[in-house]
Length: 397
Ligand SMILES: *Cc1c(COP(=O)(O)O)cnc(C)c1O
Image (cartoon, protein in one colour):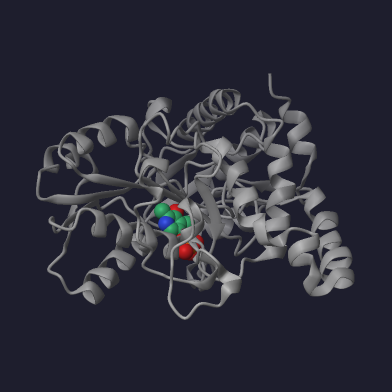
């Protein structure tokens, strides 16, 4: 059984605050401070450039990738870290389109995160080969799979509502029609059990700064199924994805397997912070995490619904169809979230009217959930959001 009191004690959580936004930016693992400090002092400071060899910085993206792989059901050597998620989406899509070159449709849904769709639009434009990005409602995906579709590109957990796609079933259906799949695990990795190997997913991507707590700007990951890894042609042919970066060849030759998805110099300090977080993940059984996430989310929903009739629950009621977040719809959601933050409850707002709360059992317990529900009830019941200052929108919501 995972000891969640122990995992909670390993995070820096400012006193007096309930943090229900770990789905957007995970909190600081206490050990990350010393860990990054060591990387700075002993490696960067004392070893200087020799640390690429002596501290094995060069292999850190694959070493850390293997640790992420354990959380998402990917075998060793199939995940590599680097860049941002937007870039990894682009790489996966470009490679998938090249493999399925005789087809021209990219199918995605309106629940996908905009950057994934923007990256696809940009790629379609630069390829200029007549590809089409087709969007449907999340519930229609299965019925729109056809032999014209080259790639099915979805985010498993909807960032707004928390609705969960059936990754395994949709991947199997897609494969029956020769469609390649790309799954964005931004709200899945570290949120619920994921098995990209068992589901036979072709490509998966995700970020490390949400549920995996690598800190702001932490690198993304990409998984390529081992059966495809030596076949994919990277669209972003960076020198660190080259077979022999230090041969300084004038022509590009892709590296072996997943290594070819590397682009340029990796962010060593962020990867060190992520390693400190992954030490905590070693203590966690994903099935325990999932059970606890559903239990805490159900409690949160029950308390908020009883206390705040003006909030409409927009997440699936059935915990098995939900990621690790709960969202409510409210016309003045932005102002209400600002009022909550002022009173010690941090969640976030997603346009046009969604108040989103991440339920992250690694460091959130039933006591936090009760405190959060009481703050929400106070803000809603007493219209504490109805104040001019809360209607002025900040750059980041
Ligand atoms: C958070 C998120 C992103 C963010 O992409 P970055 O390039 O890391 O800024 C992309 N896609 C999804 C589905 C997300 O949830």
